[in-house]
Image 1 (cartoon, rainbow, N blue to C red):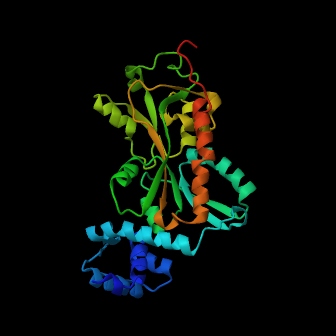
Image 2: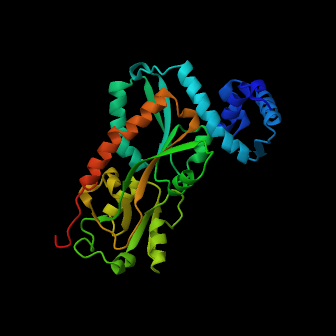
Image 3: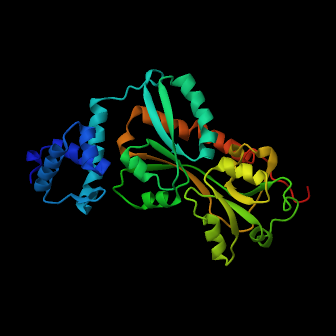
Length: 326
């Protein structure tokens, strides 16, 4: 195969298919028919002497050659696009609708700032929130159901950091701390929170799936201890309301306590065992990476909201810890 005889339009089709991991979605993105996309990929296979993309039940899977080729193709096309269509983006005149997925507490914390910015800077921008019911938002991004996901996705972030060729992009926004939360008049409020009395208490777990096992339970199992999870809920607001009116304990990211709306009724204490940090990650699809409007949204989340988040965490998530002698 000679580069001089290679139809460079095939590389544009290849990039779209690699980005979407699906021939039908790639065809829609390129304003082509699916047979035309299939034919282009066939021609590229013949030119390069590699299968490139293997059909699966969920779309297509790239071969090692395709994965090694894509970064160079992506970079070259991005450079050409930037040269041919220089970015001219005026957020005050932009018209866009973003579909975002966050847990309720994350949304409650971040959306007020985002709305203030949109009202003052981007009056033509709309936001549609989609329920986040999983720690695995990649399928929603791949299907195009959402434009951005923000939350704690430990397994996803670890995989994306170690693999190449994924169309999902991610960025760490914040790292914080888990704390034990209880009502101010809880029997343990004036006592030391020891491992024994922590495990002896009844617990509430925020679980999107309803599964009564989480990060805390994994940490306790490592030291051969366990707790009783009396209740699971799928919203942080509900968790705050229940804990403020019962003797249940819960574990929450410190910066999200204020989002429960129950700060006057709650206190927090340091956990009596080590727990990994909670990370707030932002995930989006490669198809949106160069969109000026999407860049504006990501920059806002990186900037203003991150500053607000750090300030609130420094202040104790909106409430102060209660001393054991109080």
